[in-house]
Length: 442
Image 1: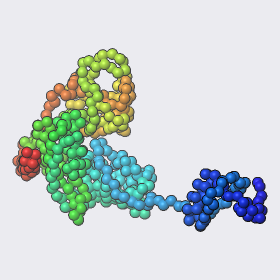
Image 2: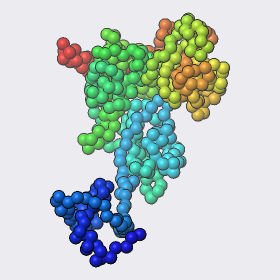
Image 3: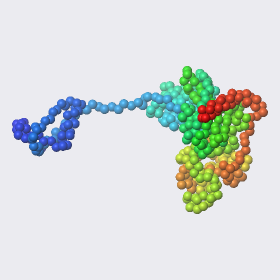
Image 4: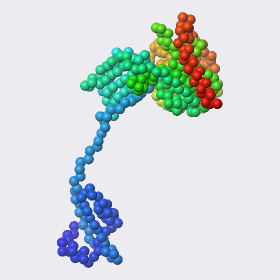
């Protein structure tokens, strides 16, 4: 490297101008504007001076910078809400809440004998307090009749209590109009998500909430909330609801006889719990219907399609459409992973192309209507993820949309008087809401 003495430097500065390349000028300008380095520098070039190159020296200096630290908020805790789905388990809910594996295992061990954790009700809400790194601090669940399940983390152990919550029950009402979907309509009406889920479950045997909804359909709902010190802590059960679908009114009221389970009935006392659900998936779309002539996408030939295909993402839960026993579960030719359920009388149902079976499902096991039995997939002869569903009568596939199914049992004679007495006010609320809605619409 060329060495230049101080005297030579002075001579060069007196005789020749300083010359900087564009790159060096850019860096010098940047450095001059950074007070972080404690530098105050001025550079000047005489006007009307021709620029010429001069020998350059590279000077490299190591600058001491302060140590950088990244702040983290992993200790901050937040409250989360998770809706209970059909066939849900508390383990699945903790996974959706992204609770870490250690806390998840500790919680499940502590809650293994909990009645509330074994009776999760679809549509209701789990409240959980957790940190950003998945540490579970508190879990609360109001599981009906003012009863509360509470689990708190104290000194790395979970302490559980199941007791009556000090809450005030209130009745609320809401209404809405369908523009695109049920959930969009309930959101626009300011109704909680679990109320929409309950409405869909109540009318699951009468309305397919994917295929059957039309713009302009209307609903009114009466539901309960439980409040603590003036703040909502739980949105409870739907008590009465009316859904007007394509001009036809469907109504339901909740009634619980003494020493029996509650259920939904029409105002006349007819049960809404039909033997078969309209669809084995909560929300999906039919990609191929029941027909005698369909061009098979894999075999490349025309043949009958003796079932209904529901397009849905891989892993979507599949529900049993009726109470029954598992007649078959396993691999079967073009069906791929297949489950066949045997129901009362001559009826059976088949569910094909599953990606997986629900854990614990086995031959001769009993399942209830609405219980999750498996998950959507594309096994067997399938071009994409979907469920192939069949309704069979004496082993022969039938079109579910055209088959008239038997009705469930109505309110018994001994409970009829109590039913009309306890549901009279609920029906009156529906009438008032309906008249108000129609008046505002007109």
